[in-house]
Amino acid sequence: MSVRILARAFLSVAHYLGGPGAARPGAVRRRRNTRQYAGSSQRAIKKRSVASRLARAGLLVPLLAAVTALAQPYPSKLIKLIVPVAAGGQTDVMARAFAQRLAGPLGQTVIVETRPGAHAAIGAEFVAKSPPDGHTLLFSAASTIVINPFLYANLPYDPVRDFVPVAMCCSQAMAVIVNPVLGVNSLRDLVTLARTKPGALSYGSMGSGSTGHLYMEMFKQQAGIDVLHVPYKGSSPAVLDLVGGQISIMVLTPGTVPGQLRSGKLRALAIGSTQRSVAFPELPTSAEAGFAGFQALEWFGLFAPTGTPRETIARLNTEMTRILGSKEFHEEWLNKNGFETPASNTPEQFAAFIQAEMQRFRPLVKSTGAKAD
Image 1 (tube, rainbow, N blue to C red):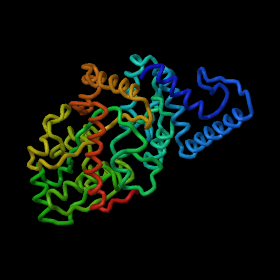
Image 2 (image 1 turned 180 degrees about the vertical axis):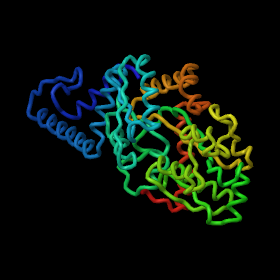
Image 3 (image 1 turned 135 degrees about the vertical axis):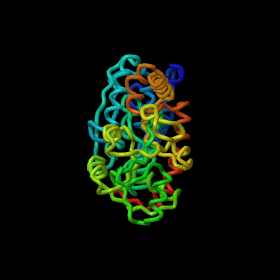
Image 4 (image 1 turned 180 degrees about the horizontal axis):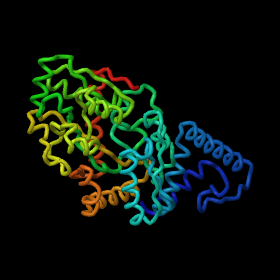
């Protein structure tokens, strides 16, 4: 967008405000008689009325912010990546890895700020209501965008209306993991056992409505088995009970329990992906295990407030794609942690992926009756 068009847009908004400096270039006239003055007053009232309607509709401030942002080179100040969950977790650590690599090319400091609470709603709402100038962004896991809308009736943000997808950062296949005492070595073994003991086996998750809960319910539906759900307050206590034998099954990312898997305390049966994991190549895919329809991915993405200029979105997407294509980033971070990168990653492709994910989770949440803890 040219500077001339930006200037005209800004002057048009300012003109409707009727404030100082709002007159159009070349439009300064002397009011030579009463009729001219009266006509001018009526026009001023009309302009203020338009500004008032814009303000009541909540459009005036975002419009001015967007025009002002467009008129400045991006980025023009510090950039914040808002993580809507507690510090120290996987999302936070990943956000810091990207922030470190974004700072140099963008020429500005990029920091990570955690704003946990209300199942990620506090941080997401903060970004949704931030100026759409590309300096406050949301770095989030899938659940904030494609699951929470179906779990909570009164979310303070709308993932479709309030955010623009910038780029998918990476994804990690989740696996069906069991306690070895169960005596099963494959998904088919597990299904056979569960069918002989309907309702006798139990699986844990980090909470009702979590990805581990919903993906296990998806597998139950596809396999036609009855397994009891035991929700926990977080993954750590659930994993402890899985190792201890209080529960028999979990669906979680293998990178969460690499030590337990390698020591034999836990056993992964298959991953919910179309390709084998770089970090755990010994694990068969769900298709190889006989359940091609079971796809379980934990993914992460970068989002900007709606109204952020397209040029800014494109710049951020370019830099994210550059990082994801870096051999150093793959070797030093992604491969070690079992993450995969998307084959194609434009904002439009990411938006289409999100829509497909929402269509997948909407009926699943409804059919399971999942309720937020």
